[in-house]
Image (cartoon, rainbow, N blue to C red; front, side, top):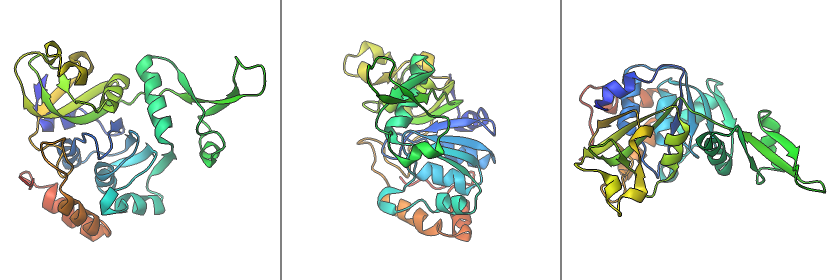
Length: 273
Protein backbone atom coordinates (compact mmCIF):
# COMPACT_ATOMS: atom_id res chain seq x y z
CA UNK A 1 0.00 0.00 0.00
CA UNK A 2 1.37 3.40 -1.02
CA UNK A 3 0.47 6.24 1.32
CA UNK A 4 1.95 9.39 2.89
CA UNK A 5 4.57 9.81 5.59
CA UNK A 6 1.97 11.44 7.84
CA UNK A 7 -0.38 8.48 7.42
CA UNK A 8 2.44 6.06 8.22
CA UNK A 9 3.06 7.97 11.44
CA UNK A 10 -0.62 7.77 12.35
CA UNK A 11 -0.42 3.96 12.25
CA UNK A 12 2.04 3.89 15.16
CA UNK A 13 0.23 4.30 18.50
CA UNK A 14 1.75 5.65 21.67
CA UNK A 15 3.26 2.85 23.75
CA UNK A 16 4.22 0.69 20.76
CA UNK A 17 7.51 -1.17 20.54
CA UNK A 18 9.46 0.10 17.54
CA UNK A 19 12.63 -1.29 15.93
CA UNK A 20 15.00 1.16 14.22
CA UNK A 21 18.19 0.40 12.26
CA UNK A 22 21.58 1.99 13.08
CA UNK A 23 22.76 5.30 11.65
CA UNK A 24 25.00 3.57 9.09
CA UNK A 25 22.04 1.70 7.66
CA UNK A 26 18.69 3.06 6.36
CA UNK A 27 17.07 5.16 9.09
CA UNK A 28 13.60 6.63 8.36
CA UNK A 29 14.40 10.12 9.68
CA UNK A 30 11.50 11.81 7.91
CA UNK A 31 9.08 9.30 9.47
CA UNK A 32 10.67 9.88 12.88
CA UNK A 33 10.09 13.62 12.48
CA UNK A 34 6.46 12.90 11.57
CA UNK A 35 6.06 10.81 14.73
CA UNK A 36 7.34 13.72 16.81
CA UNK A 37 4.96 16.16 15.09
CA UNK A 38 2.02 14.00 16.08
CA UNK A 39 3.24 14.07 19.71
CA UNK A 40 3.63 10.33 20.15
CA UNK A 41 4.47 9.11 23.68
CA UNK A 42 5.65 6.04 25.58
CA UNK A 43 7.51 4.29 22.77
CA UNK A 44 9.61 1.24 23.56
CA UNK A 45 12.52 1.61 21.14
CA UNK A 46 14.67 -1.26 19.93
CA UNK A 47 18.06 -0.37 18.42
CA UNK A 48 19.14 -2.95 15.86
CA UNK A 49 21.79 -3.39 17.07
CA UNK A 50 22.82 0.16 18.08
CA UNK A 51 20.98 3.49 18.26
CA UNK A 52 21.86 6.99 17.12
CA UNK A 53 20.42 10.25 15.83
CA UNK A 54 16.78 9.17 15.41
CA UNK A 55 16.68 7.59 18.86
CA UNK A 56 18.23 10.65 20.48
CA UNK A 57 15.72 12.87 18.66
CA UNK A 58 12.76 10.81 19.86
CA UNK A 59 14.07 10.73 23.44
CA UNK A 60 14.60 14.47 23.48
CA UNK A 61 11.06 15.02 22.20
CA UNK A 62 9.67 13.00 25.15
CA UNK A 63 8.44 10.17 22.94
CA UNK A 64 10.34 7.29 24.58
CA UNK A 65 9.66 5.34 27.76
CA UNK A 66 12.04 2.40 27.24
CA UNK A 67 15.07 1.61 25.12
CA UNK A 68 16.77 -1.71 24.42
CA UNK A 69 20.03 -1.45 22.50
CA UNK A 70 23.74 -2.19 22.66
CA UNK A 71 24.85 1.47 22.35
CA UNK A 72 23.62 5.02 21.70
CA UNK A 73 26.01 7.31 19.86
CA UNK A 74 26.15 10.04 17.23
CA UNK A 75 29.40 8.63 15.88
CA UNK A 76 31.78 11.36 14.74
CA UNK A 77 29.41 13.97 16.22
CA UNK A 78 30.02 12.56 19.71
CA UNK A 79 27.73 11.25 22.43
CA UNK A 80 23.93 11.29 22.26
CA UNK A 81 23.10 14.25 24.54
CA UNK A 82 19.35 13.81 24.98
CA UNK A 83 19.79 10.10 25.75
CA UNK A 84 22.39 10.89 28.40
CA UNK A 85 20.22 13.61 29.94
CA UNK A 86 17.13 11.39 30.06
CA UNK A 87 19.13 8.53 31.55
CA UNK A 88 20.64 10.76 34.24
CA UNK A 89 17.20 12.15 35.12
CA UNK A 90 15.58 8.69 35.21
CA UNK A 91 13.09 9.58 32.47
CA UNK A 92 13.71 6.43 30.42
CA UNK A 93 14.29 2.79 31.25
CA UNK A 94 17.25 1.23 29.46
CA UNK A 95 17.80 -2.48 28.81
CA UNK A 96 21.47 -3.03 28.03
CA UNK A 97 22.43 -5.61 25.41
CA UNK A 98 25.15 -6.55 22.93
CA UNK A 99 25.05 -6.45 19.14
CA UNK A 100 24.98 -10.27 18.77
CA UNK A 101 22.27 -10.48 21.42
CA UNK A 102 20.05 -7.96 19.63
CA UNK A 103 20.41 -9.80 16.35
CA UNK A 104 19.83 -13.20 17.98
CA UNK A 105 16.60 -12.11 19.67
CA UNK A 106 15.16 -10.76 16.43
CA UNK A 107 16.35 -13.82 14.51
CA UNK A 108 14.45 -16.01 16.97
CA UNK A 109 11.26 -14.09 16.20
CA UNK A 110 12.10 -14.26 12.49
CA UNK A 111 12.37 -18.05 12.70
CA UNK A 112 9.25 -18.42 14.85
CA UNK A 113 11.09 -20.03 17.77
CA UNK A 114 10.85 -18.88 21.43
CA UNK A 115 14.59 -18.34 21.96
CA UNK A 116 18.08 -18.68 20.49
CA UNK A 117 21.30 -19.67 22.28
CA UNK A 118 24.38 -17.45 22.49
CA UNK A 119 27.78 -17.82 24.14
CA UNK A 120 29.55 -14.47 23.90
CA UNK A 121 27.70 -12.74 26.74
CA UNK A 122 28.67 -15.35 29.35
CA UNK A 123 30.95 -13.85 31.97
CA UNK A 124 29.87 -10.26 31.35
CA UNK A 125 28.17 -7.89 33.78
CA UNK A 126 25.16 -7.58 31.46
CA UNK A 127 23.69 -10.84 32.76
CA UNK A 128 23.31 -9.34 36.24
CA UNK A 129 20.91 -6.77 34.78
CA UNK A 130 18.96 -9.04 32.41
CA UNK A 131 16.85 -11.47 34.46
CA UNK A 132 14.89 -12.20 31.27
CA UNK A 133 17.99 -13.92 29.82
CA UNK A 134 18.54 -17.47 31.08
CA UNK A 135 21.74 -19.53 31.43
CA UNK A 136 21.25 -23.31 31.23
CA UNK A 137 23.41 -26.39 30.89
CA UNK A 138 23.88 -27.46 27.29
CA UNK A 139 21.60 -30.53 27.11
CA UNK A 140 23.86 -32.16 24.51
CA UNK A 141 27.09 -31.84 26.52
CA UNK A 142 28.41 -34.59 28.79
CA UNK A 143 30.45 -32.13 30.89
CA UNK A 144 29.57 -28.68 32.30
CA UNK A 145 28.83 -26.37 29.39
CA UNK A 146 26.68 -23.32 30.18
CA UNK A 147 24.80 -21.64 27.36
CA UNK A 148 22.74 -18.45 27.32
CA UNK A 149 19.17 -18.46 26.05
CA UNK A 150 17.78 -15.21 24.65
CA UNK A 151 14.00 -14.80 24.31
CA UNK A 152 12.57 -13.93 20.92
CA UNK A 153 11.94 -10.23 20.34
CA UNK A 154 8.94 -9.34 18.17
CA UNK A 155 8.56 -5.55 17.76
CA UNK A 156 5.13 -4.12 17.12
CA UNK A 157 6.63 -2.08 14.27
CA UNK A 158 9.75 -2.14 12.17
CA UNK A 159 10.51 1.26 10.64
CA UNK A 160 13.14 1.89 7.99
CA UNK A 161 13.95 3.81 4.83
CA UNK A 162 14.91 2.34 1.45
CA UNK A 163 15.98 3.56 -1.98
CA UNK A 164 12.97 2.20 -3.87
CA UNK A 165 9.78 0.13 -4.02
CA UNK A 166 8.48 -1.64 -7.13
CA UNK A 167 4.96 -1.93 -8.55
CA UNK A 168 4.41 -5.16 -6.57
CA UNK A 169 5.26 -3.58 -3.21
CA UNK A 170 8.70 -5.21 -2.92
CA UNK A 171 11.28 -2.97 -1.22
CA UNK A 172 14.96 -2.95 -2.19
CA UNK A 173 17.45 -2.48 0.65
CA UNK A 174 20.62 -3.78 -1.00
CA UNK A 175 23.08 -5.43 1.34
CA UNK A 176 21.50 -4.09 4.54
CA UNK A 177 20.14 -7.48 5.53
CA UNK A 178 19.47 -6.43 9.13
CA UNK A 179 16.46 -4.65 7.65
CA UNK A 180 15.14 -7.97 6.40
CA UNK A 181 15.51 -9.36 9.92
CA UNK A 182 13.60 -6.36 11.29
CA UNK A 183 10.83 -6.82 8.72
CA UNK A 184 10.55 -10.56 9.29
CA UNK A 185 10.55 -10.26 13.09
CA UNK A 186 8.15 -7.30 13.41
CA UNK A 187 4.39 -7.60 13.45
CA UNK A 188 4.11 -4.67 11.04
CA UNK A 189 6.69 -2.93 8.85
CA UNK A 190 6.32 0.67 7.69
CA UNK A 191 8.78 1.93 5.10
CA UNK A 192 9.69 5.22 3.48
CA UNK A 193 11.42 5.20 0.09
CA UNK A 194 13.12 7.62 -2.25
CA UNK A 195 11.12 6.56 -5.30
CA UNK A 196 8.63 4.15 -6.87
CA UNK A 197 9.84 1.99 -9.76
CA UNK A 198 7.91 0.00 -12.38
CA UNK A 199 8.15 -3.76 -12.72
CA UNK A 200 9.09 -6.46 -10.23
CA UNK A 201 12.51 -6.43 -8.54
CA UNK A 202 12.34 -10.19 -8.04
CA UNK A 203 12.58 -10.69 -11.80
CA UNK A 204 15.97 -8.92 -11.90
CA UNK A 205 18.88 -11.18 -10.89
CA UNK A 206 20.90 -8.14 -9.79
CA UNK A 207 18.20 -6.66 -7.55
CA UNK A 208 16.45 -9.76 -6.19
CA UNK A 209 19.05 -10.61 -3.49
CA UNK A 210 18.55 -7.18 -1.89
CA UNK A 211 14.74 -7.31 -1.78
CA UNK A 212 12.34 -7.53 1.16
CA UNK A 213 9.21 -9.00 -0.36
CA UNK A 214 5.83 -7.28 -0.22
CA UNK A 215 4.14 -9.70 2.25
CA UNK A 216 6.45 -8.36 4.98
CA UNK A 217 5.67 -4.69 4.23
CA UNK A 218 2.40 -3.17 5.45
CA UNK A 219 2.69 0.27 3.86
CA UNK A 220 5.15 2.48 2.00
CA UNK A 221 5.43 6.25 1.60
CA UNK A 222 7.63 8.18 -0.79
CA UNK A 223 9.92 10.56 1.11
CA UNK A 224 12.71 12.00 -0.99
CA UNK A 225 15.88 12.36 1.07
CA UNK A 226 13.93 10.59 3.80
CA UNK A 227 17.08 9.44 5.60
CA UNK A 228 18.51 12.99 5.93
CA UNK A 229 20.58 14.10 7.80
CA UNK A 230 21.91 10.54 7.66
CA UNK A 231 23.15 9.14 4.37
CA UNK A 232 21.73 6.74 1.79
CA UNK A 233 24.22 4.46 0.03
CA UNK A 234 25.86 6.40 -2.82
CA UNK A 235 22.79 8.58 -3.39
CA UNK A 236 23.65 11.18 -0.76
CA UNK A 237 26.14 11.24 2.10
CA UNK A 238 25.43 11.94 5.72
CA UNK A 239 25.18 15.66 6.44
CA UNK A 240 28.07 15.88 8.88
CA UNK A 241 27.69 19.62 9.43
CA UNK A 242 24.04 19.21 10.35
CA UNK A 243 24.76 16.33 12.73
CA UNK A 244 27.40 18.48 14.42
CA UNK A 245 24.86 21.29 14.70
CA UNK A 246 22.38 18.87 16.27
CA UNK A 247 24.95 17.57 18.75
CA UNK A 248 25.83 21.12 19.79
CA UNK A 249 22.24 22.33 20.17
CA UNK A 250 21.02 19.17 21.91
CA UNK A 251 23.48 19.57 24.77
CA UNK A 252 20.85 21.71 26.51
CA UNK A 253 17.08 21.46 26.70
CA UNK A 254 16.74 24.99 25.34
CA UNK A 255 19.03 24.23 22.42
CA UNK A 256 17.16 21.04 21.63
CA UNK A 257 13.85 22.94 21.56
CA UNK A 258 15.46 25.37 19.12
CA UNK A 259 16.46 22.42 16.93
CA UNK A 260 12.93 20.98 17.01
CA UNK A 261 11.40 24.31 16.04
CA UNK A 262 13.91 24.81 13.24
CA UNK A 263 14.00 21.34 11.67
CA UNK A 264 11.16 19.15 12.95
CA UNK A 265 7.97 20.88 14.05
CA UNK A 266 7.41 23.13 11.04
CA UNK A 267 4.99 21.66 8.50
CA UNK A 268 7.49 22.69 5.81
CA UNK A 269 10.72 21.92 7.63
CA UNK A 270 14.14 22.32 6.10
CA UNK A 271 15.75 19.31 4.43
CA UNK A 272 19.11 20.03 2.86
CA UNK A 273 19.26 19.36 -0.88
